[in-house]
Length: 168
Length: 168
DNA sequence: ATAAGTGCAAATGCTTTGCTGGCTG
DNA sequence: CAGCCAGCAAAGCATTTGCACTTAT
Image (cartoon, rainbow over all chains, first blue to last red; front, side, top):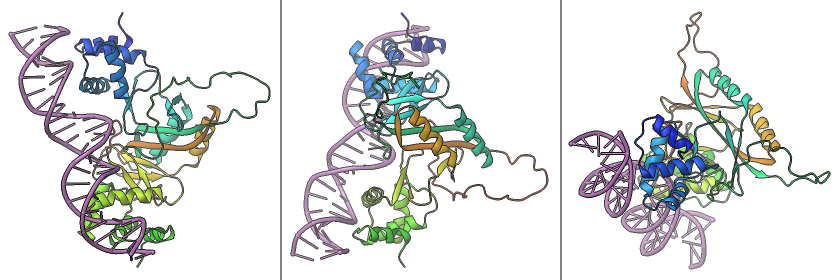
């Protein structure tokens, strides 16, 4: 069957080659924020005849077509996620590099207004929060997993993102 | 005389070489957020015997010592600013790449609390706002420059930072 | 058929590093 | 004078690109 991303490609009139179909599928199945190397790894598992250059080209094309969004969580490699569900931000676990998504309405409004005060129209904004998982606090009563506050981030790529540095 | 940054270096027991003194001075005088190449340019103007490798090494050392803070405004090059005045964020003019600093108390608190809800302790956060200068609005009365809302950013480095991409 | 996509390897752009000789504390 | 520091050029990384060949429309 046709993956969600593949459908989007067709809608935008992209020529569908075998490798694009595979990459589209890998992206459709991803629930994390893989970097190019990871996409390459997953893609070649389906079809060995895909070069990393193609992954780079494809990911860039998809980004230009609005199918993907590029993220930079520091760590030197760009990571991608499908464009979809309304605005959300990312909280990166500094220990593991795992990413948790969260949304916050107040935010954009607040920043839009700040930009306004400075004489600017807000074009876009970049926000990443780096945190360290808190010890589960002296559990009052043995009470298991509470309602998820945010979408649970699937084991995100290895590259442990660090707050400070960005390139190396 | 001894520049502000140079004083900091001495305080932290750094060996002061001629090139470090020059770089420290350049940094002390900078009111913008120069990248390494720009620092190199300004430094060699004082003393031609400074290599770009030294600028890289120095800037990294200063960052580790907490004297400088590295920023990534997208555009592929890291930019630096002296650690000082309390937390502030950056608004980047997408047209010119100029940077305006602003502070906002509500913010950190808000994010700290969001992180908390997700089970994390906030370690650090990265926030950049990209905006486009708004037309000076049909001025009601001819009223000149109003009180500066934020520290006026000096003509910032050329590298026009763009919101989307980061490496190239 | 024909324009566009792909692989491969070479090229880029920023940043780091190995080595040798120099300078600071 | 011992150890850290600087210069230079080479090495590293992530990403892009030139070229000749394959393929989707």
